[in-house]
Amino acid sequence: MLSLWYSHIYSDGIDARARFPRLRYRMLREKLSNSSRIRFVEPTEIDRSSLLLAHEPAYVDRFLEGTLSEKEMRQIGLRPWTDKMVERTAILTGGTLDATKHALEHGIAGNIAGGTHHAHYGKGSGYCIFNDLAVAARWLQNQGLKRILVLDLDVHQGDGTASIFASDPGVYTVSVHCAKNFPFHKQKSDLDISLGEGIEDKEYLKSLEFLPSLIASYRPEFVLYQGGVDGLKEDKLGKWSLTRAGLQKRNRLVYQLLSSHSIPLVITMGGGYGEPLSASVDAHSDLFLQAASFCSPCFF
Image (cartoon, rainbow, N blue to C red; front, side, top):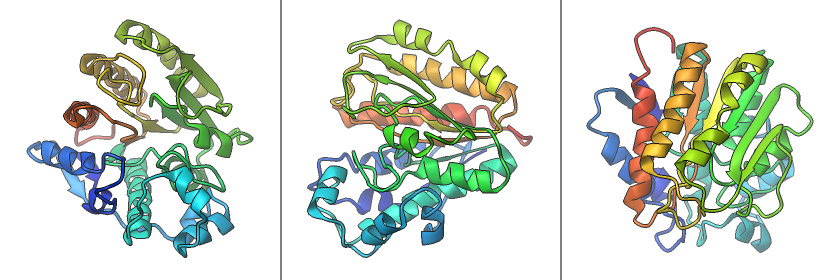
């Protein structure tokens, strides 16, 4: 059974007037609710000290105290902000950290949110306030892990994650993304694969052929998988033309590979801005249901 962390505040903590598709979390929770292979867990609110594992103290405090500048809030988006924004962010980031702790012991877990890869050490950006992937990776390092892989397959580059770990050999960052898409100023990941606009399944899946050799050579002790589905042809922000079946093949490749090496894994939801939104929700459900199919009473 796959344990997934979820809270109603993921949707309710965002104002209904925001441009962000806040209802996707609730829609996904409802879609997955009938699966006997999934167990839902309420996240715990992350504490300040855990946020400081990956973020600048002054930035953390400005956010927690509600004193971010207008420029900082505009760069993040999600406006108009609600009075639940601090709580929502702490719970969302805590959900990924909770899932990471679970996966380190049991092999696999996920967060029906997260993958906030545009948040940098001292600033937020692109709907991302704190970088849950970076916080989780730093926590894993504190547990003694030496080789952590962040596998970011969102259509947008994981610029914040890349910048946070730019000089850290213990965290290997991979980003497969659209070259001409947000963020327009790219950072340098350990491995960047930039693809053109309008690509379809065949070219996309071919771009992932590096994965088996990377896993064999790097031998990660833990993988953080940012499984964004914003590469779908229905996505209004993606600029790619991937199908649901193509993303299913992507997920299967990742899960089969990591399962064969018994590498612990956390899955975060990443981007999905489909029109209709149900197209993204369907692909997000595949992300987690496919992971659940690899679960067993034994270690992943």
